[in-house]
Length: 86
Image (cartoon, rainbow, N blue to C red; front, side):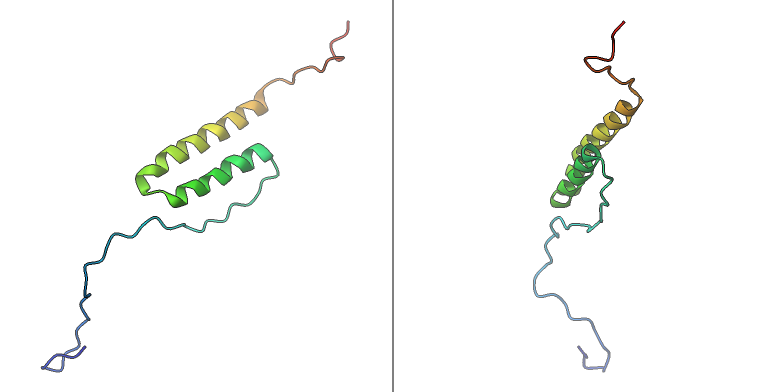
């Protein structure tokens, strides 16, 4: 818009802008090949539909699941039914 003095001004919005709702970030999650880990990573998509204050619960849940998956890698293997013969 140009005013009477010939200066260009930005058009003012007709109505006050409302806060934007949650928007997906579009982060690509590459599959790891480990079904349990991939399920936890897929859960991150739940945060895309929440307000920022709801992200913490999702992130903590995913972190807990990934930590459990890593801990399970350190656990000694459980012998099969016929592997513990004397």
